[in-house]
Image 1 (cartoon, rainbow, N blue to C red):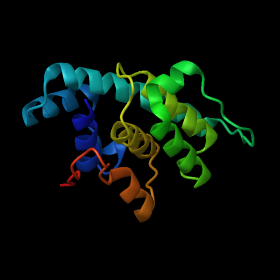
Image 2: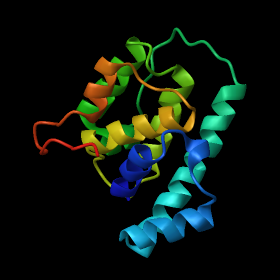
Image 3: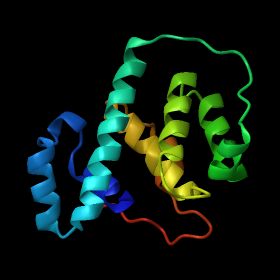
Length: 154
């Protein structure tokens, strides 16, 4: 599923440039992605887009501390939580965007969610809202993790 999300980010500069879900599914299938992965990615992306759209209509300031419940700590792990806190302190994520990232990570059937996948979630959230991270933050989001080979952009 994450390969599809990265492909969409690389192929469609803006989310409104994507074709409708049915046409997009055909294009992804023609490129060689598995139908189950396509379906899973489109549902995940539809849910993300719905949540990201709600975030644009809400305004909330948070000066408090975010505490993670046990389930969130188990799913995210220490590295991901630290990265989320870093992004929020760097003003890349608002408190509402942080909550969307956490919710989308919890929606995966993976424990713990790898830092590489969390970075894709953040990137897709920003992409779905038409926001682009600055060059240094982009390198952080798309750079290689210690346990992963460098990701190539096409």
